[in-house]
Image 1 (spheres, rainbow, N blue to C red):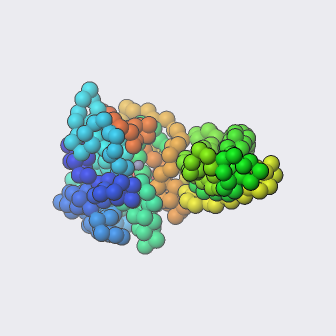
Image 2 (spheres, rainbow, N blue to C red; image 1 turned 90 degrees about the horizontal axis):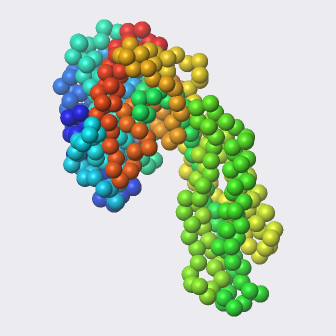
Length: 378
Ligand SMILES: [Zn+2]
């Protein structure tokens, strides 16, 4: 708990999300000092000034396990609790990052300390991997994987309310540009209203969402979805707008291809311009992240559940609705899942908190799981 408080006190807002954000360096330095004291070999990776990730290792031959967390947080605007001065009330620790995910980082560090204080593992290797930029473009983990970071399994300690989450949704973004014709508001014969084109397109998204929901479902993730994130357009009440721009986001399941979604959206654009052929609609894919789905038969979730059971804490399987770096570990061929204290529903919120009891339980379950994984694998 005191480690979570110490981490929350360090402002590590991702500077890509909020101007003046401090970056991860102070948290990487605190964690690196602790891990060195406990006997880990520590390497830091700085891909831009102040943007630091950390890889710490202990042990050697045998099964290798990554315990992973990210050190950055989202911004603090609009928060109703003090972001960097943690407070504890009614069993909850409040502050920016308490839940997403300095609580998880503290829990995995406790498990790492337990491991180290029992002497070097006789077998196996534990890697503590703390990443930067997860809340924006995951440049930290991207660089580490590109440099060859590998292990037999990874536990990503994102907030799961102590459920075991072997699957997560992916996402895809598109910019949709609507071009009309500017004209005086009194001249419908000359004007083509780009905002109205966007309106027709938006109304038709219900059909796209129905199609998404019926196309593929997943036992832990439900169905895919699509929504409009932002809209911009128009200059004045008495002017036909010649431009409007939507940014759409779809949350996609394993098996749903963003390329296919892009084709559906392009077809929708054609339908809209059929109503008014003077208009133009262009659908441009921007960012995408893959879903993650550890095969149901993989023993990793069961091994983690067994550790919970042994600590008197039965833990169910569930799906992670948010995108998480577990997906990138999986893409790199490393079996990965999410497990950690706090609820993803409290991540990024104005009164973010983590339940103290979950912090303690996560630390002891991770500690037990790590010991058993390093000696036996899964
Ligand atoms: Zn997170």
